[in-house]
Length: 128
Image (tube, rainbow, N blue to C red; front, side, top):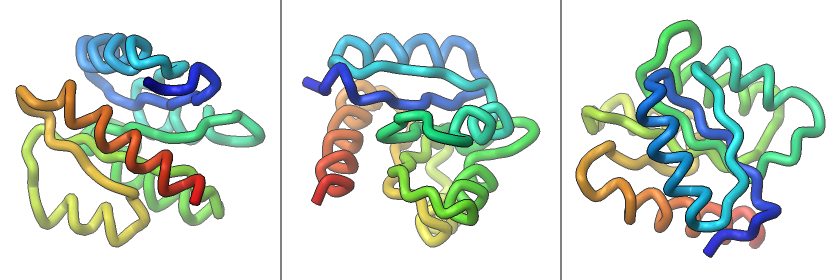
């Protein structure tokens, strides 16, 4: 179970996905704050916000997941970033990892278990 003090920023332009993943994360004890796109996420990440991790969709309007990773890293923020993709496009996911994403999860029927596994791993790595 997550630490209730562990604040996660969940970024996805699909309201249903935000709600579903938010419920999964909250059920595992995480505090969840949402954003509809990368632009809103960058605004919420500015300053001292207490986020321990970001979970972001890859394909979004305005600022997509790849651009979000680039901007966050350019600003010197080392918060772990997990990228979500409905398509599992290997080249784009590889590029996200090269730009500084911590890991990725493909949106499929196993996402409920996989997202918690990847978040737990990323948070442990961030501490060590």
